[in-house]
Length: 252
Image: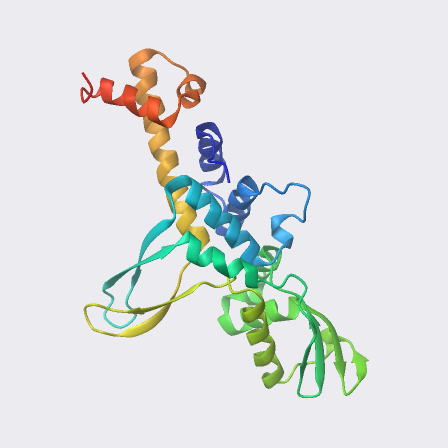
């Protein structure tokens, strides 16, 4: 995808810095989405949004990503690296219209989770309980249910635990980018664990850093040359960096 113009990047940072994580993710995905005539990002499988965010991050800072997580055993810092190419390779495995799941005498018609579901459940009073939140998400994805060859109302029937587990597994397989998991080993205590790599939060952190730096660049060049914000942002990144080096005395 094209790199975001400096003016657009600063607008996104300013407009969404106080927004919820879900709203931020959708705003960045929309900025990266070049297929404007298709289904809105909020209604696509979560992995499709993740893929847009990965492409945006690649345009911002390249394919290599370095992140840190806390070790759950010793609370030490564990570093890991990932690449946008490796994660984007999983996009081909996303199933936008998954087939019904047959398990334990039940046939479940379902769809993948979307950001619309995440936002709806986040606002539900029962979402504070992780187990209840997970069940609410699962229920939102049920489209139809047949039990012993009879059609029943999925909202009125409690699915057996085995069917819920099978459906959860099917959902994970149909959208491998919905929840990016990384297997890690702590270098301090050798504890092995699985971490959730929050791509949306990672990309926002990158844009947040860029936005703050752009604001400082505008301030410095406006003070030094009397240029407006629009004039400073219209400069290419390389040209803007050269002027900043002149102002700071690094470029004679």
